[in-house]
Length: 505
Image (cartoon, rainbow, N blue to C red; front, side, top):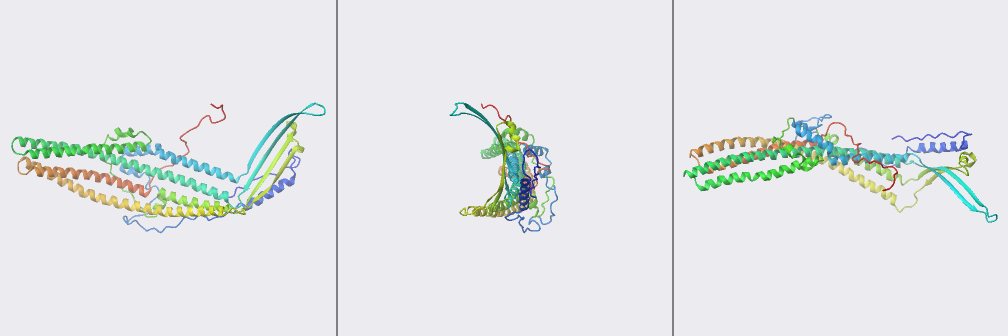
């Protein structure tokens, strides 16, 4: 940032202040010297650390670098309007996101506070004193008035860049807060999508359990009829009834899991837990991604993942703070001045003869502080090392997330194909077993085993479908795609009114 250069104009001779011309010249000379020295900074200049990355992901060898916006709103690739609406509502109303936006406003205000260090600080004061005293010799009471007005100014020159490094750290702090918000929004979108998919999966499994239990009750009724006709045993009737009851017993557990996912979405949207339960029950269709996500190359995580960018900005901020602490080791120079006037009448305050002024520099040199200032620099250097390690760890964690998501999605799709084949064969086996059993050509044990195996395989198929969707969501989060468009963080949650002077209650 370029040095801020204050412009002061000397007061011409003959003005009401009566300040001599040499005062203006001296002041301008001091300002010119301070401005020339104001470009000096101490401490290390930040450079983004280099990272040695592979040319491609181990589980996506044929991939090209991601294009800007290619991962934006990745959850819309499900083609589910309900999911899109829930994510949009959550992004606008989530309380964690609101807190992250407040941290951005805090960081911006902190920068304005730090930036004020470049400018002089001026305080003014006015006083009026009325006194009465008695002369001891004459016994006459004497009444007097005294009016005073004046200004005090101080300006600490940023000779070694302490304020400049502070502003640099504050700038990085704003970027840290912004990346923290983007991380929160990415996690939020992923959590809403994952809980939505899981809730739909539980509803689909509840429907499967209800349909299967109905079929198994029909088998139990057929077995009972055969028992009454003397063609089956009481053991077969008991097993058939038990199988239907066992399948029905899964429904309460699945209902509980569905409610937990629905409640989580409600809270993520900043609403009561049960706010969208009825809305989710309208359909039990498990969403499936209609378009694949481009995996990109490992270097993309440095630009796409907000948590990686957050760690890098924290490293830059900690580097600036080293210079801020190191500047305290050097002398500090301040310019101070005052201008005062007094009189027994208010009109006298403007007279040149009543003016008094003073100005001059002061230098503060750290001579002995028992190593406190040097230790403060070492503290910041140690914190910089921590952020350096955290940045590289964030890169490795991001790459791990991508590899796991790519592999998990690919393997789950293979598993889904095998389960779909198993379901088709178990369904045919069950149909044949029931036909043969009704004709007396097979035992009830074969029917029982076929129905149990069919239910288990169909339930596993639904779970695999859910896992494909959740692996897709994990990949979207791992690659770092986020919501499109700018995010307004300027609106506070709490708006205060009547904050000016008023009678106490």
